Image 1: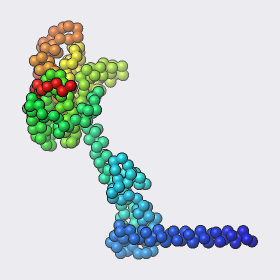
Image 2 (image 1 turned 135 degrees about the horizontal axis):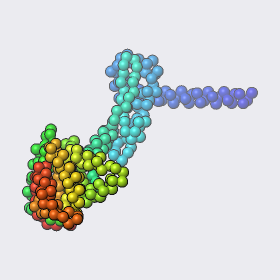
Image 3 (image 1 turned 90 degrees about the vertical axis):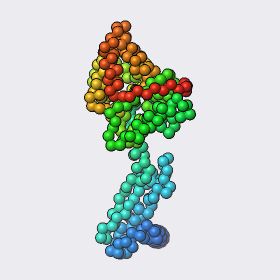
Image 4 (image 1 turned 30 degrees about the vertical axis):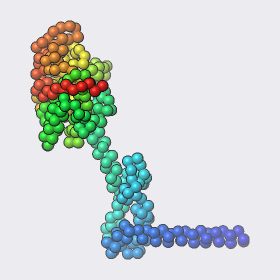
Length: 311
């Protein structure tokens, strides 16, 4: 008999505790300014309707709603039921609907990811992929013309992608590749896709593609990307097949389609023509090399940088 009385007393105490907790929770919810604002804006939400949907209000109340304590490293909306989303209350008649929308930092993260995906690279260092026009060192007057030309070029871009890029040439270590990275990031801000390729690695990539028969597929990617950037063209000798069937094919397509191509090189165009005319077998093919140079001139404008070696 005593055990029954003890159990009954315990049950009554727990029930009383539950009722107290419930009333306290209800009071907190109904005193919340956001919830009060919703209830006041919808007169049909009487006490009975509110009590019936108290669990939805509690979920809304318990979540981060305004990104006030969010950060890119986590916290805030990142700890909500749907990480990175904040709750929104909508009322239809006497029915409360709870939904979630992207928080500020989720939208920023998605924008950054989209921007990053606009810049593709083949063996380019992180420093180049993070380059920007604002961080180009303008102290050296020998770089001023290049900077001015590129800045004016980027300012002129509006709805259509330009038909020509740049052939940036000059001595080793003057920052030619950094200019490519800065242009690529400016393009990303304008929603223009670019691909940066280190020329010697491109040659090895194509050679390696014979193993899985993906040569045509990779060449097609280089042909059709909105802005193609070839770094250090002339850095190694090319076979006549690569020069004519790969590089020539890419440049021919881009010339016909009006797609800009950017280059960096230690050679001027005349020097590059001489370099390309001599194949890996030692043959001299001046006419075929001249065709490549003609296509380069059709898809780019030359910029010379004769600044001090920055390395």
